[in-house]
Image (cartoon, rainbow, N blue to C red; front, side, top):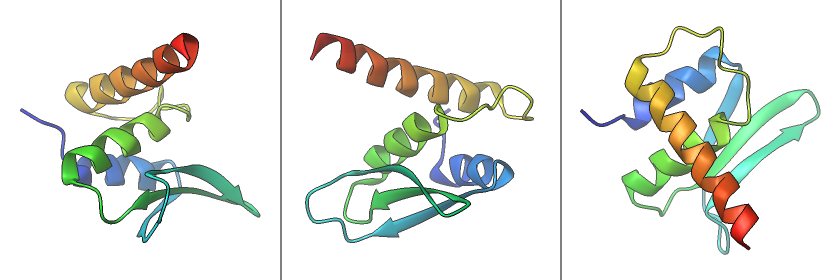
Length: 91
């Protein structure tokens, strides 16, 4: 069974990370901090699968170890953050 965007958004909410979908002209999205607020901003024009992959990748930057996450959500976050790290190493 696939991970849904809602499951990842719930994980972000539990981490107190604010997720928004905006019209990003040249970017797919990413995470940042605005004052004391941690944010993940995702291009609203992306396909749902791309949004899931980006949100999972960005959640991998946070400590999710103590969270009550389903095994498939935990695996998705781990997989996407590993894929991003591999891409950085090969670049």
